[in-house]
Structures are given as C-alpha cells and as structure tokens.
Image (cartoon, rainbow, N blue to C red):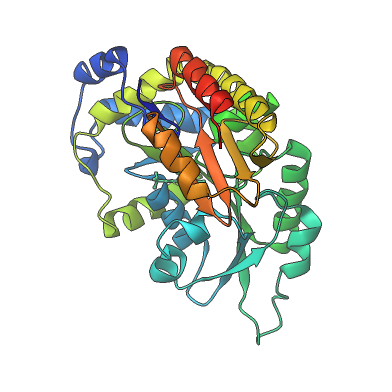
Length: 341
Ligand SMILES: *Cc1c(COP(=O)(O)O)cnc(C)c1O
C-alpha cells in the first residue's frame, strides 16, 4: 500500500485517458493548427459561456497572464491573504506585472463584497496605487477547499463593474466547487472577466490549464503566453486527456469529497487531533494537540506508507483524489484510528 494524500496533482493518467491521448489528431499549436486543442479551447469556452479559451502548461502561467492583461505596472490587485497567486506563484505578480497585492484577511480564503470595497483605492487619489483587479480563488487551496456561494460572487462582480475594476477567478479547482455547491460552469462565466481552470488537479490529467475570456482578452493572452515561453507545439496529445477528463472524470469528484468527509470524521474522534477545519470539497486541514509534534506524526504515517504535508503554523493537510482508492481509504482510516501518539 502506498498512499499519497499530499495533493490531487499526484494522479497518473488512466489507461483509457492514455489511449485517447495516443489517438489524438495533432498539429502545431503555435500556428493554431492543432485540431484537438482548437476543439478543446472552444469546448471549455462554451462550457463557461466565454468567447474564447487558451491552453496553458500550468495554472500559474494562466493566472499570471490574466494578471498581466488586467493591470499596468504600479497598479494594485486585491486578493485574499491565502491566495495562490500571492503565496505559490514565485512572486510572479510583481515579477511579471510590476503589481502589488492588497491582501485581505477573508474567511478560509474567501472574501466578501464589503471587505473588498473597503480596500479599493479611490481612482482620483494619486498617492496610492490604482486598484485595477480583484482576483478570487474557488475553491480556496490554502483555505482548505472552501467554496464561494454564487450570491457572494454576484455581489463582488457587481461591485467590480461599478468601480470599473477587472475581476479574475483562479478556478484551479472550480470543478470541485461546482460539484460541492451544485452550480454550473456558466454561472461563473457570467461573473468574471477571466477564469483560469486546471485539468491537472482533480480531473486526473498529466498537464494543463486554460484561461477563458473575451476574444479580445484571449488575443492579448496569446502574446503574453508566447513571451513567457508557453507556446507549445503538438498540444493535442495533452488536450485529448482534458477532453477525456471532461467527458468522464468530473462526476468522480463526488467520491473524493465523500472520502474527505469520512477522513475528517475519523480525525475528529482522535485524542491527539485538536481541530479539523470544515470540509467542503477534497481538502482536509487539521492540527494536533499542543503536546504533539507534527513532524513526528508525519514521520510515523510515512513509515506506514501514508504521505501528507504540513502547511506551517501547526496545520497539516490531506487531499483526496481519483488515485486514492477505496482500499487505500479503508487502510488510511484504520491506521489513523489505531495510531498511538
Ligand atoms: C494548483 C493551483 C494553481 C496552479 O498550479 P500549477 O501547478 O501552476 O498548475 C493555481 N491556483 C490554485 C488555487 C491552485 O491550487
């Protein structure tokens, strides 16, 4: 038994997915001549009700290009203090766009309209950086997979329109949010200027993200993607994996969420666990009692062939995914329950 709960990025393409990749018709995407990718970009854009889509090798590059499009050097964007764009994209916001982040302390990575309105710099006050972008994350990674409700998103989107500020969604795990809140892609498309989605998280693809937006926006995105070195050639092989995942794998996220809830219930009953954060999707964040050492805990689990990671500040994370099987799940719950610590 080899259990990996570190991230939903550890999944390996299934045989069926690999077969569909092998059969893909391909061309040179730098010339926009890859038929499989062209179809995928159209498909996902339509799914979200956007005019166009552009494939990216990573969600980081897709987010970074969106930020570049919506801002000018010296501008400021607003995001939650847990945001991936702030913590985990190598400082790209300042490196690529020359933009600062106004961090807001939301609830589990989620912001509301009032919190955002409060920190928008007045456009006529030249002492402060112009606020030109609000970037939200759904689900919130560092927030433990927390999901927005559509009402909150609607009110934030309306505020941005009123203030003439662009709004971007980092939807790396939007598929999980859609399953958990029973919402549709189209609901989100209406509310954001750009949306970045990933195929390489819960959906089980080896590689791939996509930026969605208006025709005009995606035209700009092609240029910035090229600048960053993200123009690729026979992408259809990877696009075929995403097509396969969209056809077959979204519904399976339900199982990941169920397993996460079950793991959470087991953790709550353990004497050495202090707090288990609410579980909305496939991410479980918990902490141990003060007298317990997280490093030791993780080492003991590793000895039992179960891998997970620390998030710092005493937090430990587990992420369920499609390669975390029922058998592994039963095994993990047994090991956790019996662990003397
Ligand atoms: C994983 C992730 C990304 C993109 O990550 P890449 O590894 O660059 O594909 C972006 N945002 C969030 C919230 C993520 O969890």
